[in-house]
Amino acid sequence: MSTAIKDIFNRDFYKRFSAEMQAVLPFFDTHRFIKEVYREDFDQLEFKQRMRRTSEVMHLYMPSNFAEAAPVIKTLALRLQNRNFANGIEFLFLPDYIEIYGIDEFELATEIFETMTQVVTCEFAVRPFILRDPDRMLEVMKKWSRHADARVRRLASEGSRPRLPWAMAIPFLKANPEPILPILTNLLEDPNEMVRRSVANSLNDISRDNPALVVSLTAKWGGRSEWTDAILRHGCRTLLRQGHPDILRHYELDAEGMRIDNFRINTPTVEMGDKLQFSFTVRNLTSKPRMVRLAYGLYYLRKNGSLSRKVFLISETLYQAGAVRDVERSQSFRLITTRQFYPGVHRISVIINGEEKAQGSILLMEISNS
Image 1 (cartoon, rainbow, N blue to C red):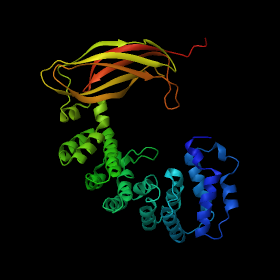
Image 2: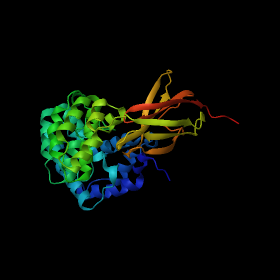
Image 3: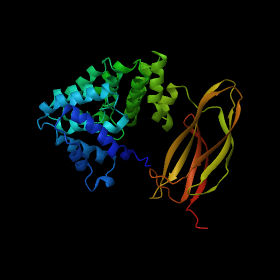
Image 4: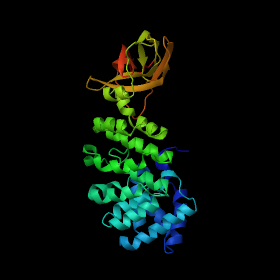
């Protein structure tokens, strides 16, 4: 049985969805609908392509005028919600439908988004509306940030993220995220953890293009509550991983008096598919407890011969005065689709509170045929 995400769009799903469509559109033709979706190239389509195909075929049965289609979509969304029919991301084609056919009907579309996101997230579909009419859309999203339903509040923060994964970026918010700060301010102490994590993700997005702003907000907003401090810390994760000096100072993370001994690369030659193994000893040479953010950096060899560092967190914990701890770690070079490995010399470093304390090299080799 396939586990590919695209295969949630299968004949069984379309039959179940068609039964709901027939309830709101009696003339809906299930057989023709499935036949149109499953045109000869269906098996070659990836997830987002199948989602778009479903939206387009659904449109064949909907009123062509979006104002007439809107109540049908809203009824369908409410029906799915009340029957607990939605299952994760398989209904993403519904907000996609609104994105395609409702882009010129702002008020109707945003009204449906508010209802629809309580069935399936609309975080991707709202973004073209932000790009087309930023002031108006962000004002709606600011209102959503005060909504009684946590899923609508999350839509306000998640949908306005400057760098939302899987979605189109919003260049003007990457350049200047100030317009979304009122939304984040409203949600900073939200009682729902899902919403708070969304705020943290938005702050992390902002930190990639505007690190000084996130450092400033962390200082300004910190200390309000345990929830707020957790949001801010999670929102600073990229800055902490990068060893940004201002955020390290803010969290009082410095490497003075911390030492790495006995750094050893136990597998100096690694074959693709195998694991790099290394070990070292951490010492707190000071006379006071120290909070230590311990990580390692792997400098991957790129195709052009340069090195690109990726940081992996090991732990963040308190080291008592004089503490000594032995650490062993491994890093897989298992072949994956999201990273291309190149044979040659790679480097590895051990990082304490943003400062590299030890470095070494490994030789990555092609898989042998023997």
